[in-house]
Image (spheres, helix red, strand yellow):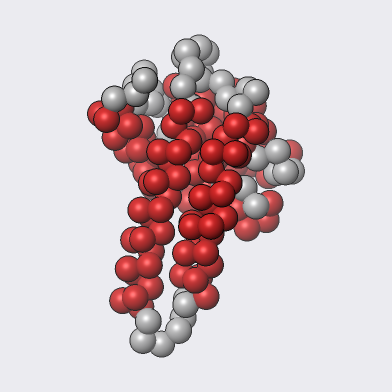
Length: 160
């Protein structure tokens, strides 16, 4: 069972990974092109950095986040994107963006029970395997490109 500090440390790892150069763009491209879930992609990378395989957990992860993503995160994101460029809504759009981030954090906490595991050998091969688990609809070329971006700046991950 993860303690609160473990949860906070892993969330910090997710947000730091997302802030790395090129990561946000690559994840959003995978989301827009193949319906991949950005948080699942980031979790796959973070767990690969920790040496934790997600093999056999794709269905459980999808079940843990699917309803929340489709009923909460997705509609917030869609509305925020629709408001892009609309005159006079930028302050509201920023509040909506903050609410979307809170919803993603809640989604993250729903995923956590499926992310545990005994750390093993970390590396790019595990990263590609984890990405295939969480984003089975992602074309191999897109997955390899995403893995390359996510592996930049590879360093020991939180909790390792």
